[in-house]
Image (cartoon, rainbow, N blue to C red; front, side, top):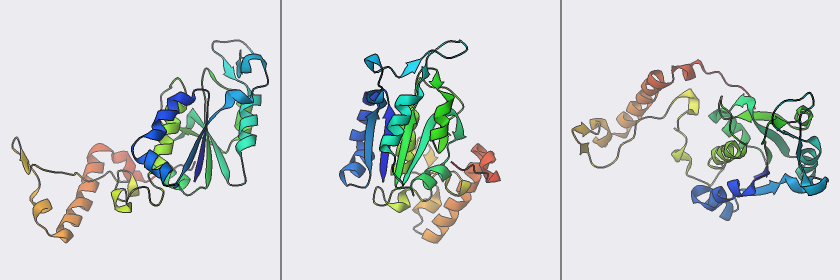
Amino acid sequence: MRIDILTLFPNIVEGFLHESIIKRAIEKGLVEVNIVDFRKYSTLNNHQVDDTPYGGGGGMVLRCEPLVAAIEDLKDEDAKVFLMCPQGIPYKESHAIELSKLKHIILVCGHYEGFDERIRSFVDGEISIGDYVLTGGEIPAMAVCDSIIRLLPGVIKENSYENDSFMNNLLDYPTYTKPQEFRGLKVPDVLISGDHAKINAWREKERLLNTEKRRKDLLGGNHDGV
């Protein structure tokens, strides 16, 4: 898989690529992640990429030309382009699974007051990581990358994520490690019974109970496509 991240602030994203699981996935050649400063696509003086909004108002708006030029330069027949935008579809695990099957993804990080509306004509979708506004799209882009890359074959063991929260619309089951008792709180007996059939049954039951307790809304099973 190839992921291109279009940003005005490459340093925000750079460190993310050099740590932990993401670093190892890149080193193994399982994913290629490119950070692209779209300011270099500006043809204006001082590589300007924004301007004041028509009709007045506060803030600066990202211009069409540099962003569309960057998208068109990077895009190939396999590419899907997504804006990181608080107006986009709320991102879910089902979207991560869907995107992890693509060959090439371009993530566009906004900044300032937002995008010129016409930029939407050159993308395939918009992604929001929550109903709040950040100073830019870099943090959402990194979150989306992380959620996708961990699902790629060979990045982590499949049994490490197949029962994760949000798989099959359920939260994960409770997990425990040593010590067996801590301040009067004990590990459930079933987990130290050695009976794997009972352990699996307990885990499935706990996933449902955990979801009912914390996120009953997930049991409705609604998914929006990216």
